[in-house]
Length: 137
Image (cartoon, rainbow, N blue to C red; front, side, top):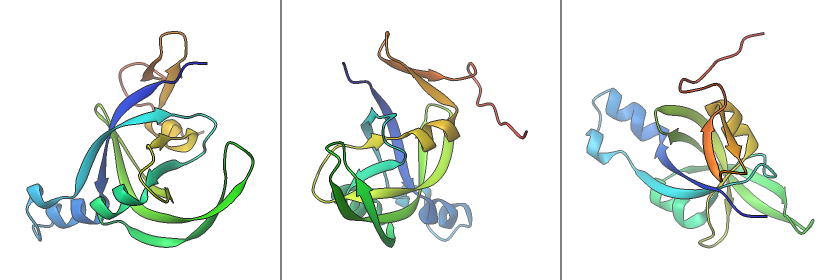
C-alpha cells in the first residue's frame, strides 16, 4: 500500500495567543511547515522531540503509545499545538516520539479539520467540499 503525505503547518498556540494580544510580534510565533504522513491508523498528531523543541511546546504528561508493531512505548504528550491545513485549523495535543521521526497526522486531527484521504489519488481533500463543516448533532 502506498503512503499519502500532505503539507501542514504547526504553530505554538501560546505564541499565537500572545501575538494576538500584542505581547509578541507575529513573526515571533514559533511554527514549522512539514510534509506529514496521513496515518488513519494513528489516532493522534505525532511529532518528534526535535519538532516539539522547535515549537517550544510544553510537555503535559507521559502517555503510553501502541506502535505499529504492537509494542508499547512511554512517550510525552505536549501542546497545545495549532494544526493548519490549507485554510483550515484545529487545536490539539501531540504525542512526542523520541528522535527525529516524521510527523503523523492521525484520525482525530483529520476529523477535526474535516479532511479525508483519497487513497486511489493519494491526496487529502475536504471531507465535505471546500469548506470545513462543523457538526452539532
